[in-house]
Length: 193
Image (cartoon, rainbow, N blue to C red):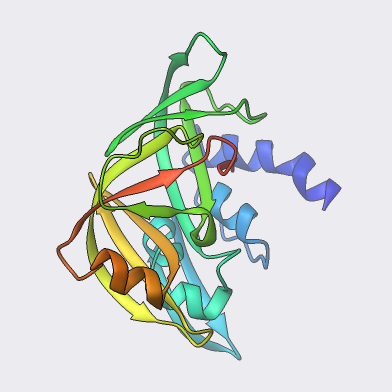
């Protein structure tokens, strides 16, 4: 793993500046989220998913296949500065996020990943809580998972988000397709990739 982390910046430069296509075979979802634009998921030699990394990892099928700690949201954003508390401000298509400092800053761009289990859904703008981030979103899909949870896919701006909630929460919040919600994230929930 240490060797991989050492060569990833070189691979990123090839991808970003030389525009060299790269075929990378990996089992590491953080590496995939960091490096990939498009992905093909295989299981027992069969293609089970393919598409843009943001779409594949935020699909409701990803939650069943990868689990709530791995499946989630990948957001590309623009670093717009720091607030008074030294939180990094990142603009994404659905709004602005405030994040704890993270090590990997690629110029003015940031690629962020948050696990489905770390997304809280609310029907009203959150108030009086320690989570600093809330993006307005619309429920686009809701699917029960084998672990008796529910994978809820959201649209926020042009981004797709994925949350894992309980069936009790789906009922209590009326999380039907088309429902308007707020996807709430702690500043420390995001990992840079």
